[in-house]
Length: 218
Ligand SMILES: N[C@@H](CCC(=O)N[C@@H](CS)C(=O)NCC(=O)O)C(=O)O
Image (cartoon, rainbow, N blue to C red; front, top):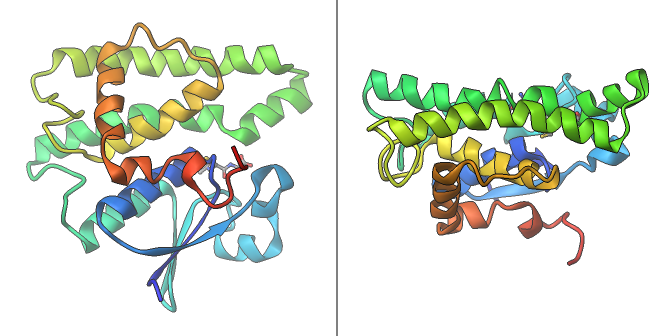
């Protein structure tokens, strides 16, 4: 029996981050799905696990429930250090956390399902308006990320050197949201190259939305 239970959803990109980390570390886990559009994540049972009512949550059987994908990634990295998701040096760690947070702090939270639903119900935003909102903030973050990745010497095959870190996990996951909202990524060749590099690795591929048991049949 796996030690970990991942409460998540196939299309959730914060869930995707945790799936990649578990795969990279070679950790087996039980997959429990919450259909966000059916509000499964607002059920009383789930709110007991995560009062925030957001996925993912990583349950450590008979021990604890972890929430917040970035905190979960750091926990997994501390408990299962190989392969590392953060560099050994403090400057490197600060850089990787900063690159990660461009996505995890400055892009994702303001484009999340509940924000887009609120724009619709409270401000009458239609599909086109929601797409414009998404693209505005995603382009702002992607442009800054591209500038840094293209110009900083620490960038290698991946965001930081030649092996994947937390920053690559965030970048990879975000690309699936970008695609859903028809983002034109032509201006971001370095990001696209790193996305391609990640996609060569089974740990990333296996975490993709359409590879999950709750994904619709293709
Ligand atoms: N900062 C949180 C964000 C979690 C989050 O927003 N998850 C989304 C799916 S990617 C969610 O549960 N959305 C449900 C909603 O907005 O109602 C994390 O990184 O875990």
